[in-house]
Image 1: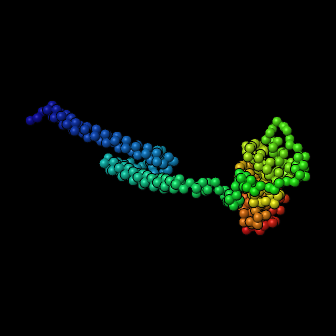
Image 2: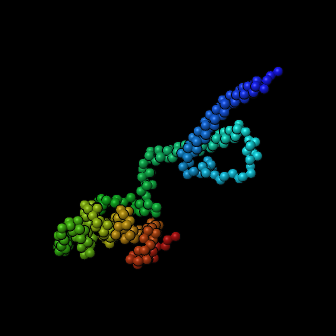
Image 3: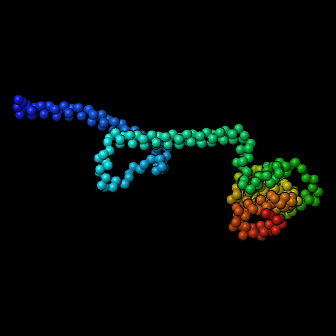
Length: 305
């Protein structure tokens, strides 16, 4: 018969054996749990890299509402293996979503790259598209040059002696601002009605001092010198050039209205309407203020859709 002391020894050995066999399983379960948590953390980091906005459609928020009390029965019945399988399924779904989104992004980038390559291989079309204003004003001059070369293509007839004498009576200013002197002299010639001489003088000013504060006045007045001389086709390029140089310059709005007037003189109603519409959109205050009379006068000369 086994004594009570022997039974106690056997019971202790049995308990030690059971505990010894469960410890590796517990260690193994803890290791898998750590690996799983690491994998989930890496997936969440990848999601935030692909979707910086943290959209809830692609990953769950870090802080969630605490589960309602009273559900201890279901939690107790869920085994560790079932929980791991559920979490693995969720990871697989997230990885599949990331893969799909990556493929879509790659395709979009490829299409953009192809478009850029196409534009680079056709620089003429790309340049035209980039430089053309919304209202197609760049086509208004019909290919006329902006740099005044066309103005030199047809030399004026030699002036008479009386005209030369009259021109010589107009004094050229002599101040410490040579550029302003050139402009002012051109203005005096234009104001006196010597349009060809004013054209020559103002062309010189526009070419020699393109960055002077008077340049917007000079280009606009040069266009007027041609327009007043009955040459709207020569005037239009200078008005367009002055408007496109800087739409906020002092005489840019004036040039746009005179451009419309040049198109009216050339009986080009379509382009005149384009210029007038652009003026109304770009300078609404001037259309009802300083330039309202000229604006309304030009509009009354054409019928626009």
